[in-house]
Image (cartoon, rainbow, N blue to C red; front, side):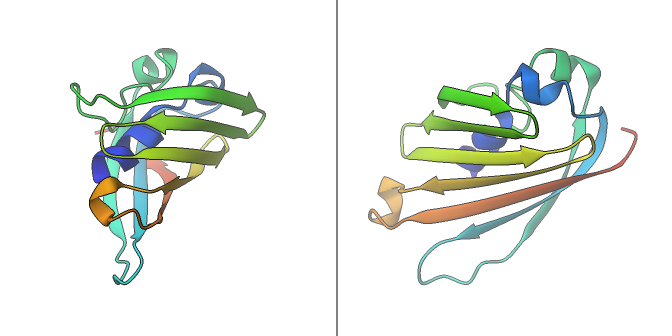
Length: 130
């Protein structure tokens, strides 16, 4: 499910990216799977000007990740889209500002026996990339 999470974060497009500042972001992700305790996973991501100019389509995503975004809808401070991955379709809803974001991914992975999974990723700019 984590490749889906990374892909969901990664598929924000140009209109979203134009408002995000380059820099180092601390991201906390919580995956809620029915019947399992949810533990936050913390990571850091360097968002570069190039990432922003390219619409962040590969940020946090493996280069060979096959997930595809569709039905992308953007408005100031918001983005939503559908993700098509080999193991799981998902709906993504996100909000953002110049230095923070929150993405909520709702999916039903085949590997989870068809049980709905909800992932929340929150990111906050913590400084410049090292």
